[in-house]
Structures are given as C-alpha cells and as structure tokens.
Image (cartoon, rainbow, N blue to C red; front, side, top):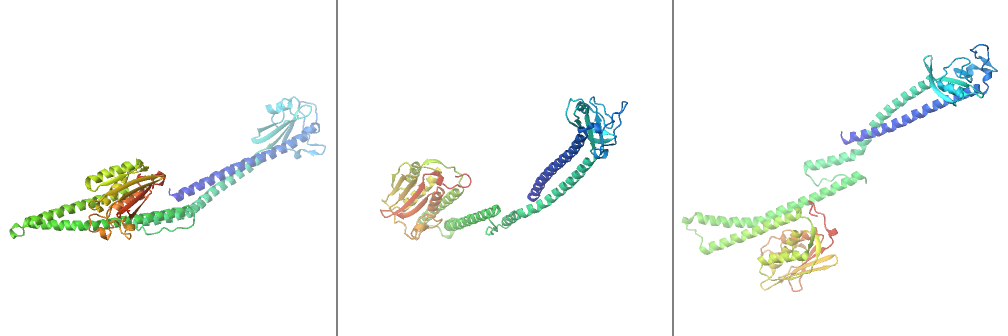
Length: 466
C-alpha cells in the first residue's frame, strides 16, 4: 500500500473501532433499559397482587381453586398476560405458570424476590416471583418477544450504521490523507525532477510553516550546499587542469626535443653536452613540480573527504614532528618556541597544516634567514605563529593568499602551486579556528593560526571525521 492508502485504512480502522464500540455500548444500554422497564412493570403488577392476595383468589372446595376474573374493580387484563398466586407450601391456586425451584423457595420463605427466564407453550417469558406477607408468593410473567424484537431491530440499525460509518470514514480518510499528503507528493515530484535532470538550481516550492515546509526548506538548503560543492569541485578541476597544463606542456616539449635529437643523429642536430645537461635539469625540475602539485591536490582532496577520527593531541608534539620533517628537506634554520597545548583534532591533518606553513616560510626565507615557530596556549585559545625573513606579503594580497591556486604577482616566479596555504586554511576551518597573514616584526611574513582547545567548537565532518 502507498502512504495515502495506509493513512486512509488507518483512519477507517480507527473510526470502525470507535463506531463499533459506541454501537455496542448503545446496544447494551438500551437492552438494560428495556429489561429494567420490563422488570419494573412486573414488580408493579406483582406488588398489586401481593398486597391483597385474597382479593385475587377464591378458596373453593377441592384441590384446585379457580382464579377470579374480576375482583373489587381490578381486571385481570390490567396485570401481566400470565400470573398466578402460590400458597405457602408452593402450590398454585390456579396453575398458569410453572413452579420453578426459585419460585418454590420464595413461596416457602427461603428466598427473596427472584427473576427468571421460562418457556411456556414455546414462548420465552421473563418471570418475577415476589413473596406474600404471611406466606406464599406471586408469580408475574411477561413475554420477551417484544423486547427481543426491539433489540433485533436496534442491532440491525446499528450494524447498518456501523457499515455506513466505516465506509464513509474510509472515503473521507482517503480524501483527507490525499489532501494532507499533497505537499509531500509535490515535494517528492520536485526532488525526482532534480534527480532526473541534475539541475541543482531548481528550488522546491515552500508553502506555509508546517513540517512539510520545514522539510522543503531543508531540501533547498541541501540543494544549495550541493550546488556550492559542485561549483567548488568544478573550480578545483578547472584550476587543477590549468595548473597541470603548464608543467605538462613544458615537460612534453622538452621530451619531444630530446627524442628528436636522439632519433635523428645523422641530421647533425645533436644536442651539445651542456644543452643536453640543461634540458635534463629542466625535465627533473618539471617532474618535481608536477609531483609536488599532484601531491598537494591529493592532500586537498583528502582534507575534504578525510575519514581520520579526532582524538586528544598535544599540538606541541605535532609541531615538533612537522619541524623534523621540514628540516630534512629545507636548509633554513628553524627556531622553535612551543609550550604544551592540548586539543581534540586530527593529528595527521594538523601536522600537514604545520608542515605547509613551514615549507612556505622556508621557501621565502633568503640565504642566512631563519624561520621562527611560536606556540602559545591561553585558556581555551591556542595560537601558532610561523614567521620568516623573506620579503613579506603585500597587504593587498593577504586576504587572498589562502585561496586555491592563488599566487601573488611576486610569487609567480617561485616554484609552487598555490595550494599549500589553501590546505592550511581548510584544515584550520575544519578545527573551528582561523588563520591570517600579517607582517612580521622582522620584516618578513607572519602567518597566525588560532585554534580552540575546546572540542565543542569543532565542525562535524561527513564520513566520520568529526
């Protein structure tokens, strides 16, 4: 069943239970009221006879007295259709009703009033036996057929009403469910169109302030996030393609030149040893740049989809590990001044962030320059600074140095891809911090990273990273 049918069925079922319950209760109440009225009538007639039983019987010689048809203004037709008076020993003065054990017990004084169902001449009667003062009893009976007929008609009417109510509830329930789920169907259709067309710019209509409207707004926000993610991916691919095209083109040109010189020795176009050495050096440099660019692209993608779990870490240990790695591949002295600074984060990502800061500072430090690393913890805030003795960063370029593939005009002659600081900014943002570029007091560049030591500041990353 679809959701509309299920809701209609549930509504019909709920109404059916309610209608059947109310109908059953009404039937029971009406039946009790009819029997109560019948018993009241029997009791009234029986008391009439029991008050002065001698007026309703005549003592005649013989074992079987004959009941009077009219005594002192009372007519037998005023009482129930069947009645009889019992003697103190339980004998009927004029047999008209069966003397049951209960009636005999009442007549002999062993029991009080009794109500019983009896059968006489194939008819079912309700009989009441009441004691008479001084001994004996009066039996009064009424046929149950009128009451049973009324109850049968009532049951039939209630059954028809229940069926009609359930059928009407099913129709109304389905209509109400269809109307109530119409916004869900519209939302589903809009999502399906987005899925089929891939058009993430299609906004889902939002109506009202109910749960469906909230869901629609959530879908629109999700589509917006997906649009931004797709745009970022497209920009990354385009920028990566652009950045990869230059070293690949240069590499291809140098390889073709070297290949032609090797394949045509008879033409006299043999490369001189010094040109060949220079060409091989260019190839090696381009391979290194291409490898570095590829590694940075991989690091950038890993930062976006990393599944590394967060854990408690001392940032001082992370900085020490990054410094050791940087000293292996850089000849610039590194001064380290750090203190213990605990936080919850991803150790590998943090080490890659610090290493990129150190590589950037080492690249710009002139011969004889130094890189200075300082780590301080102040309450819930951790500050990491990396400074160099290079030319510094122009103030106009500082807001953009953390963008992907951005390279300041002064840096375009230097090796690099423009991704190192972008990875730094991304990692810092994932840990709930901020990074800025400033001028160092010594005249070079100073990059300042601020991180919260409280893990509640961290962003929750998809894939279980945080």
